[in-house]
Image 1 (cartoon, helix red, strand yellow):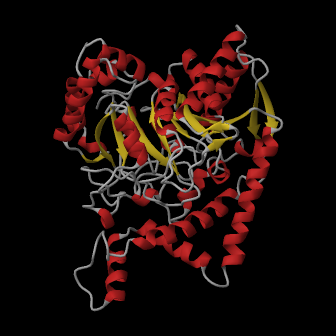
Image 2: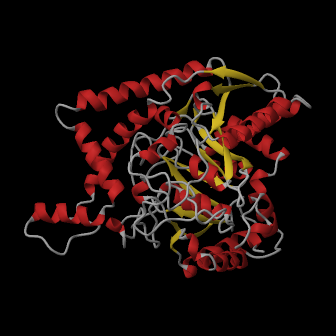
Image 3: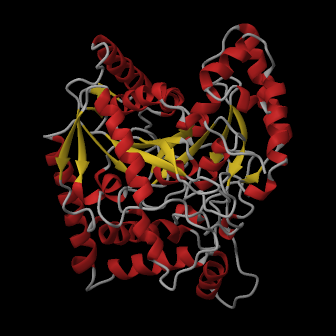
Amino acid sequence: MSLLNQYNSLQSLGMALRDKTFSARELAQDTLQRIAQQPELNAFLHVDADLTLQQADAADVLLTRGNATALTGIPIAHKDVFVTRHWRTTAGSKMLANYVSPFDATIVEKIQAAGAVHLGKLNCDEFAMGSDSRNSAFGAIQNPWNKLHSPGGSSGASAAVVAAGLALAATGSDTGGSIRQPSAWCGVSGIKPTYGTVSRFGMIAYGSSLDQAGPIARHASDLVELLCTMSGFDERDPTSLQDCHGKANTGERVRDDYQQWNARFAEQGSKPLAGLRIGLPREYFTSDLNPEIARHIDAAIQHFESLGATRVDISLPLTREAIPAYYIISPAEASSNLSRFDGVRFGHRSASYNNLEEMISRSRAEAFGGEVIRRILVGTYVLSEGYYDAYYLQAQRVRRMIADDLQKAFSSCDVIMGPVSPTLATALDSNSADPTASWLADIYTLGISLAGLPAMSIPCGFSNDARPLPVGLQIVGNYFNEGQILALASLYQQDTDWHQRQPEAE
């Protein structure tokens, strides 16, 4: 058994490192060996053992001097939409197949400054466009619970490596559910914070008003430390927030809120959640929801009720309208963001062309995959003259209405809970004549992203299949209430072991 599987929480692994049970180099070597033994997952796009071991040696120096943080020596991998020096950054696309950035993304900078050890870059749906990790130019990613199934997307590899014990934690990005859905399908924990609380500087943009970085790990308590490290105002990101409802946007804000909620729960004895109202949107619990998922979600809600919480029936009437609104707004922003990839300054350039216009069109046609081309075309169409008012502006109005509906719901509840996805992890060989069919899998996550609210997924059960597939519970908080939902998730995980279960080795 690997060291990461023996010490599968940040706290226990960090304590072993500080106690000199093993060194950061030994831990990194053990983890790199395990990564090399599971190439079939197709999770890593670039591993450089020499660079990783250099960082591990630097972490050992900090540990020896007593200057370690909670992340010092901890092996972490980054989704390949975050630019990194030395490691390639491809965004899962042929367009950037050999690109190496001259700088690090802000969250990469912050995590490395805390002494974490970078294991490599993780595969993803091309430019983060997809819900099943089959859209990467470098091949599909496998789910470690059943390698014939998808790990979800677009942060599928980020969730898969944590579930498989190839990294203690990983970074992901969530535009319409791309941290929460793969976390649910892989049986791990992941959080999308409030939009603007984590810097997007150095994240290759898909939908700029929606993209948000966040961490994936096994334990909710690990997410606290990771999110505290990642969060904070960044003047290099024009969408970064300085103020969070009267509190400065720092990692300490998240930690303080988390600790305050834990203290409040502890004060209430055997009913720590007394007075907490859990909103259950009736639109989430329809015939479209897989019965096994519904059963496990209900069991999780009952557990919260046993701790003193009360369930409240709420309505989010525009749940279905979130799908067309999102798939108008996000492609529109993508068509603008991806216009920079033209073969002129960087990225793939066609070998055969007669003029500049032909060079650009051929370069883009050769390097972009089908899903990316589809979204660029949709986005260009809805932004074109004569359609901008009818589609794009109308979608933005619906977005505002969705956000208002969520605020109305929070007037009668403290948090919202429900499923992450209407289905279990889908088979990698499943096909549909409709290329947009997979978009429906995001029905429970899109509205939250459009509103910019914090939300997370934690494991709450497994299917009855011969090779069981995980079920995820979504917990949604109001703006800047990451500490509250993380405290709730941590309390649930103190009484359950779903998050500790690991896939059987094949």
